[in-house]
Amino acid sequence: MVVEAANWSGAVRPRHEILSAPEHLRYVSGWMRPGDAGYVALDGNDTPVGAAWYRMFPRTDPGFAYVGTAVPELIIGVRPIWRAHGVGRALLQRLAGSARSAGFARMSLSVERGNFAVSLYRSEGFAVVRADYGRDIMVKLLR
Image 1 (cartoon, rainbow, N blue to C red):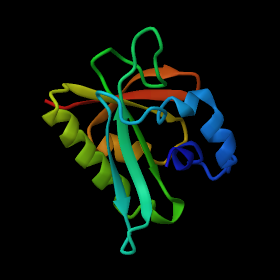
Image 2: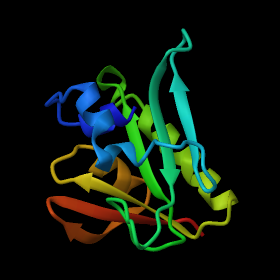
Image 3: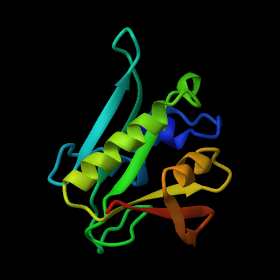
C-alpha cells in the first residue's frame, strides 16, 4: 500500500521504483520493529484494499512527517477504486485508537498539497503544523 500512498494523484510511478526509493522503503523495511503498528482493510474476498500504519523515526533520521521522537508518523494507502468509500477513514480511526491505547499523545502525517485526503485528515482532527517542500505536516492530538 506504500505504492498506493505514493501514487495518490493518479500519476502512476512504477511499483519497483517506489519500493526501491529510500524515502519510501524506510516506511516498510524491517517491519515490524518496536513502535510499529498497522491495519489492513480487506474486501469481501479477503483482498487488501487499503492499509494504514505508523512508524517511529529518530531525530537523526527523520521521516517526512517528523515532529518529535515520541510521535509516530502515519502512512495510509487505499486502492483508487476504494477511495471515498470510508476505507481510509476506518483505517485512520482504528490506527488513532491504537496509538492512543499505546500511550502516544499525538501522531503526525505528511500530505502533498492538492491531495484530496486533506479533507479526511482535517475532519479526523489533524491540523497543519508546518509546511515543508510542497507538503503539509499535520498532527492529531490523541488525548
